Length: 477
Image 1 (cartoon, one colour):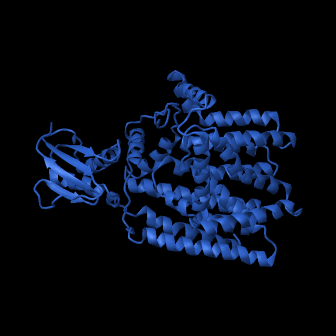
Image 2 (tube, one colour):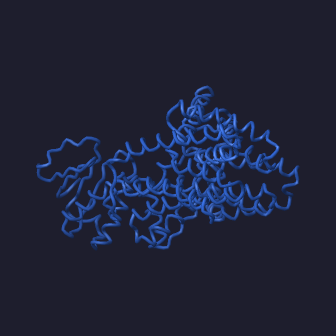
Image 3 (tube, helix red, strand yellow):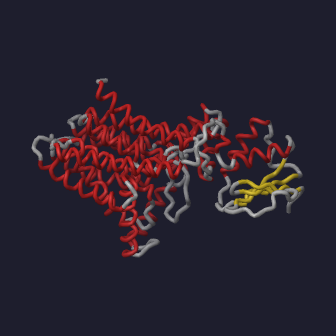
């Protein structure tokens, strides 16, 4: 690697690592959904039970996710012996891998400036940073999204075989967040018609690409065949809902909700400040016009940029047909697409005065990022590989210490209908202290989640923790 490339990569890497390092070891709550997913991953590692479908929220249109997230999560569970902190580290490493892959793929297909600007923005993007170290399937998708974009660049450069990796990447994305894949598939189909006319691809490769996509869906296909086509029937329910115009929102409310989600997504990618984000949007529009007009830029690069620019607009149109509320994580791919777009446009500037404008914008974003990161995480820095950094762990550890090795029961009164966060932590701590039968015994611990506990800490049988109170009872009805 040349000296300039090494320096650029080092800067990006440091910017990406430091805040994510802080987040990994921050004393953040352990979500109930993370507990559920880790319990499934634990069953894969310990009991060798491999699910064929992912979590289903039981919407009226029941479409299950793929099981790829559970298979992926089983990796840190296996190597970390169940330690949830290792799972957090694994998630952060996967996001760092996405940034590294973006750097080297953009450097290979464009230039060093493009790679630096794009990954610089990815490294400091506010919402992208917040996703690191959270054990949740949509936040595993960015690595597959970058792989998708890298494969697309390779394909547009003239390698037809790379299109197989494009569709394979979509299948991987679907394993982590199916909504991203559902919106991405029609865009690829629309552009494939154009690519077919331009001779970039032929029918044979389209057929093979469908097979590579189906390859990632093998567990789901087996599940469908053995469960009376559960998700397929759910898809028809969804289509029927669309045809009759039903849904949670009327048309005008839906438009306003989609606009709010999209504008928030753009602002959260660069800067929550409305004026800064609007200025960046204007600059990007201006740069995009001249990039597409400039005859020096290769045709494949223009086609790639058009695909990136079209993504948010097509996704907005497609989302109008979705009857539910648009969630931020449904558009997770747009964070990466925005950063890739900005990186390509900033990296293509050859006018000296305009170059200074791009440097100034990046400097402003870095200052805003530094202030925000310091404000959010200044009181949450901890360094420990112990799961005690997970807020609920101190409660679980107290129960085990107080029970003195005797069997006990526990009941969690949570703000969420799921209590799998505590279920997983009780399993993890229990295997170390040798207490496995914690669902039997005369003693019961009532764990109550409270925003502002007002229990007298000196009252017998009560123990207070940040956000939780524990009551010890001899018996319960």
